[in-house]
Image (tube, rainbow, N blue to C red; front, side):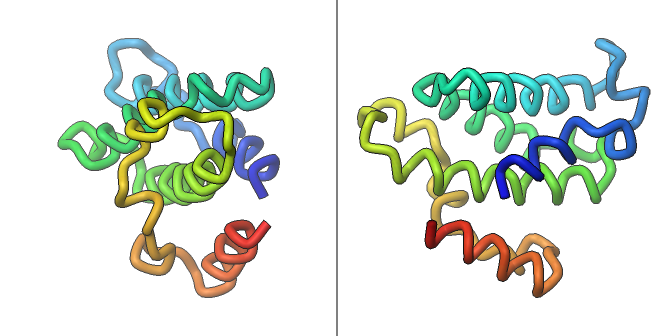
Length: 128
């Protein structure tokens, strides 16, 4: 599931071209998504919790309204799945783990507007 979410997060069809401009608020969130995907591909898992935290702060802040609801939902879904993946790893120390918001580790996907079948996919990923 992470691989398919990585592709969607950075897909041309998901990102408004305006969000790629540094002076647009959406640039920040797209940059966090890009950093997370790159760190995952490089297997640099220890650095990821900081960007999970920054992404979540963006999504829960006022600047989030500058990004479409669909993209925010996609990013939140990604952060939930990614947080579960990271917390299951034994190589993260307590400081690294502390960056992952507790709201993500105990999230109920349906609360965040996911369709029931998508929520089932998230739950299935949590079990892996």
